[in-house]
Image 1: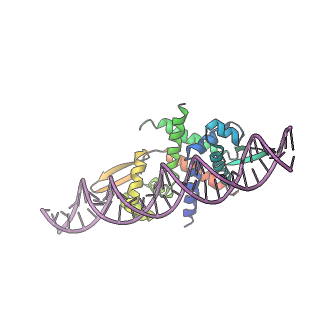
Image 2: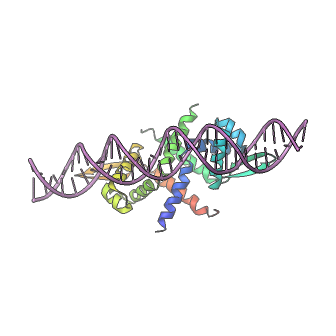
Image 3: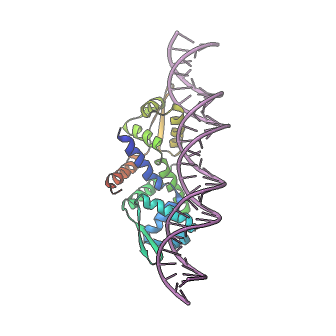
Length: 98
Length: 98
DNA sequence: TGAATATATGAACAGATATTCATATAAGGA
DNA sequence: TCCTTATATGAATATCTGTTCATATATTCA
C-alpha cells in the first residue's frame, strides 16, 4: 500500500506544528525574516534550542536562509504554512464547546 | 500574554494529526462511522491501542460516539478535520521539491 | 593573528508519548 | 446465572522528542 507513505508524510508534516517553540518561531518568521539571535531573544528560548529547531524546519523545507556576514536570516519558504496555521486557529476559535 | 494560550492550543490541535495511528483512524471515520473493533481490524492495530487513541480523540472533541448494544460506533465530530487533512495533503503533493 | 560574535552540532538527559498487558466493565445469548 | 464479546482503563515499558551543555565552525574587527 502506497497509502502508508502518504500517512507517514502527513504525520511528519503536522508534527512540525505540534510544538510550541516551532510555532512561535514560525509566527516570528511570518512577520519578517529574522536572524537566529533575534528569534532567540523574541521568544525567550536559547539560541542553541532555536538553532536545533530551525535546522529541523529547514530539513522539512519550511524555512530558507540567507547569509549576511556572520548573521543568518531565516524566512518562510512555503506559503502553506500560513494557511495551515490559520486553519488551526479557526478551529480553536470555534472550539469553545470544550 | 494571552498569546501563549493560543499557541498551546494550536500545538495541541496539530499534535492530534501528528501520529499515524490517529490519522489512520480518522481516515477510516471520514468514510463512515465505525466500531472500535472494525477500526482495529481495518488498520491492523490492537483494539486496546485503538481504544486509547479514540479516548484521546474524544477528549479533544474530534470524534463522537453512538452506542448500540455492546458496540460503540465512533464518528467524526468536527468538520475541520477534513479541511485540515486536505490542507496537509495538498502541501505534500506539491512538496516534491524534497 | 587573536578575540569576539553568531550559528551549528553531537551527546546526554529529562520528559512526553504510544503500545502492550492485565484487568475491569458492560451487554447479549445460552 | 454463566460465558462470550466489545470496549475501557491503569500500569509498565520502550521509544521518541526537546532542551541543555560543551564544543566546533565561520566571520568580523582590532
